Length: 224
Length: 347
Image 1 (tube, helix red, strand yellow):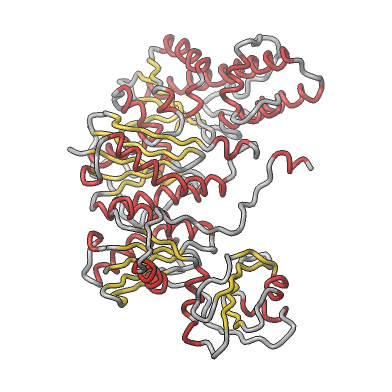
Image 2 (image 1 turned 30 degrees about the vertical axis):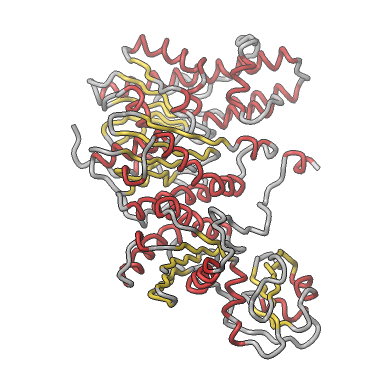
């Protein structure tokens, strides 16, 4: 099976292609140029590295957020466009799920995972996961202190906002650093696992997971 | 060239997809208006628009392809609006279009939305270069000499509000809903255009620049000074529309003179953009141009308001001229017509 993974929900981003159960090629996007400019050329270059063509792809995978609104849409727009032409399933993977999955190997016995990614304005996107990175609840938007209160007793803390949340916890907490970014290879692997399950159904086009509402006031709200 | 071109438009609050053939045949054109999503805010909210675009665009593309009875293998190219416009929405259409072009293995064209409007009369009426363009939209008000594909010279533009903006702001002052243009036109139908003496900014001046903010200020003053009866509102709408008509006609007259000096063989004034759907304005221009020896051409309403058929057509023209874009083409919030790449060969 050949799986294309795309992750642009966070600054920078990456693409990866899995072939026969392992990563055949991957590339990172540069921070310096916009994702909308880089993404398709970088995918083309990576497929060339792996000597693969678009027509070879069996499954599409994309990080759906929460993260940067525009970045989330850039990745999903690309995958939804590819899906129309290639007529293969496309699976959306939560950004925090991908972050948690990367940390499985670094857990100690009895530990669960709590991911907090920076959402700016003193807020974080937070989600709990089991020791095998199975989601324990949905991703939510929380102020730093609330995120600290929601930290499970047995959890390690990771994500781009882990060091911001840790001081609010009020007890010693183990922080795993270096696991802030979701990556396309993990997203492709998670999608491949999901697609291999016997009860897998193609749910249609992946949708963004914004978690945060758009910032806008209705005319009525503005008058108040 | 054979095949068809897929067009994608997501630069403001309409999500649209269309399939157009090189012989000017519009095979399909679907538009999803987000009007209801934005109405409560009294204007377009960029983030809400971008969210609606990503939600609906791929479904609309499938519909446009199905209605046209074509598959992705039939495409000669994909054209998507790359700006100017609300960047979050632009990027949705731009990246979707690039992905389709890449996977289908066909050329990509990053279309300037304003060029889409500028060329729409060539799609609907086969208008030949050179022609004079009056581009009147929610964000623009320009008089442009269209010399050849990609070769545009701006003769005049607004120094403050765009014309559609003036309609929307006036509608809001008069307690009408959003968007203002159609509301004002309807209400003005039962009003007396001579009831209120409104200013005619720029009229009689040299050149062909526009200004509308003074007109809006005058209306605000009137609404603050008195309580308006329904008849007053109708009269004010009619007076406003007449004032806008006077300004546009005066500016267009100067532009026709300037254009005729540069292009003696050109005698067509194309009126395009959402505000060109205003029938009163079209009529005023038709009367005014007769005296100048020009003919007014206005594409049908569905090609004046935002649509993807004009984007597909601009793509078709560019493909035929060999003007394609790489897949790293940027989205642009601001992108004046004058900065476009011109066709290498002109007739």
